[in-house]
Image 1: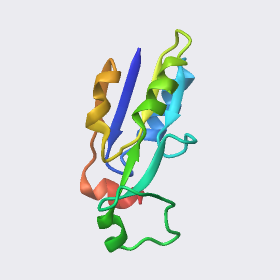
Image 2 (image 1 turned 30 degrees about the vertical axis):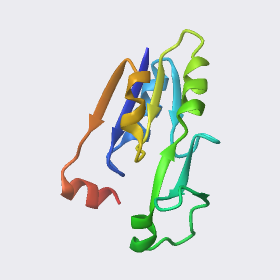
Image 3 (image 1 turned 90 degrees about the horizontal axis):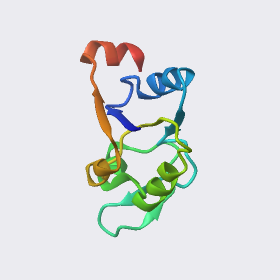
Length: 116
C-alpha cells in the first residue's frame, strides 16, 4: 500500500513516518529525499535553491513542489512493502491519485507553537 501523510509544518509527519517504518515498510521524507521536491519561483516557474534565511516575501514568491515523475518512480520501487510518504508541497493535490490512502495530521495552534 502507498500512504501519504501530510499536514502543516511541525505537526509530526516525519515522526509518524519513522514510527511506521518500525512496523515494516519504507519511509520517504519529501523534504529530504534527493531530487523529489524543489523550490520554484511562482512567476517564472524557475527552480531555485532555498535561501539560508528566507524572508516572508521570499516564501510568498516561491512554492515547494515535488516532481510527480520522480514521485512515481520512487513509489514503483516499493518491492511489495508499504510505503509511507510524509511531507507537504504546494502541488500535492495533483498527485493524490498515486496513493491508496491519504492522512491529514492536525494539531492545535498552541501545540505547534510549543513544538517550533
